[in-house]
Image (cartoon, rainbow, N blue to C red; front, side):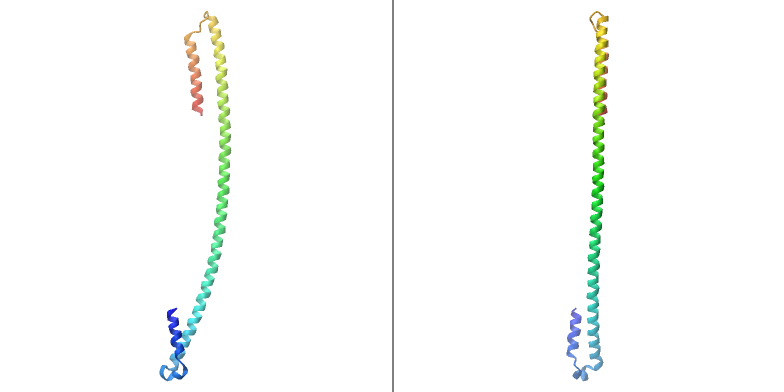
Length: 151
């Protein structure tokens, strides 16, 4: 810009009456340089405006793309979280059902063992053999351990 201003100032000082000193060719060359500089400046401004328009368009396209991708990622994330949550709920239901099943099985075994002990007590004169009691207790403890391990 400074060079253009200098060329314009020098060209403005060269009048036709001073051709004897500067020569007509130099004056015409200065006017031509000034005209070329103005044309180049206009071209540069037009190109910069064009670049700004394209830049804004690209930024808008990028924003749209980013927003679409974020929306898609959010949707996929929500779907995944819902799937995980439903699987977690199903698994929790399954675990609860299995735990209930194991507790019911333990209660059935306790009733069965009480019947066996009652029969053994009647057969052994009012006493339950200690080995039978230990065997039943060990089996019930093993059932509790198995139930804890399945969790």
